[in-house]
Amino acid sequence: MVQVQLRMPEDLVKDIDRWVSRGRFKSRSDAIKTIVALYEEREKTREFYQMLVERSKEAREKPEILVPLEEIE
Image (cartoon, rainbow, N blue to C red):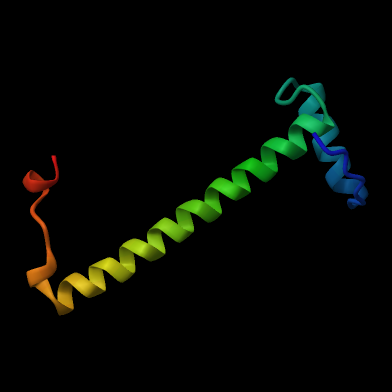
């Protein structure tokens, strides 16, 4: 694991410390890693959604390319 130093607004650090004191996270480090992981997951979801939008557009324009779900299993 790589150690990273960062600067954050004091209010945000206070929020993180409050979450740690309430038991939501084990430490500041745990909180920040979790928040970054959640952001990463959100970005993956956004990319997946964009792919679905593109595929839906393709399906509307060329319905003959659709494959029935029964054929996938």
